[in-house]
Amino acid sequence: MNTQYSNDTQVRTYTKVNTFLRSVYNWMTIGLAVTGITSFYVSQNQTLLNIIHGNIIIKIGLFVTVLGLVFFLSSRIQKLSASTATSLFVIYAVLMGTLLSYIFLAYTASSIVSTFFICALTFGCFSTYGMLTKRDLTSLGSFMFMGLIGIIIASVINIFIGSTILEMIISYAGVLVFVGLTAYDTQKLKEMSLTMPGNATNAMVRKAVILGALTLYLDFINLFLMLLRILGVSRD
Image (cartoon, rainbow, N blue to C red; front, side, top):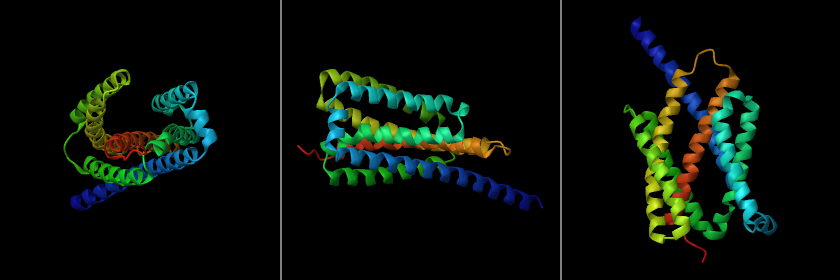
């Protein structure tokens, strides 16, 4: 009897985690698709390119808006309705795609596609590890976060010194940091699904899913950009 109860509990737990993470991955994929389509569309429209990348004020404004939106969503999502949170996530993906349209001008299409698939495979492996491992990755997450701060500082410094060597070091370090964060964030989302109350409303679950999708979306995008700096073939 106890064995049957234990098996039923395990099945329910597995189903709960699997359903939640599948929704997170689905929304992350939607976000990536929206970003990719937007980025390609903008790159093919010379008028939009001139407006966005030909005006430093607009480009900085777009960057600040993207940064502000991700902080707003992360910190205020519980106070938003599920539909608003979802809409803001899609808007964020569009703005990010607009901002990243430059990659189609800087790198060949074949290298962008190949790097994307390498990134997807790498992301998938480490996300699966984070989901299946029994090891507590909290310490890894803290270490990776410190590494992320270091990368940001080094990137700002490199804006002024323009060192190619430092850029490569940042890129390789960035790959390590974001594969680590991918595993950590996936485990954190798994734990979130396990601790979610049984009486959670659909709106509460949707907001948790959107927040999870945003987290993994950012891990994927940043990992992709770091790999593109390493593997991308310049158009020049």
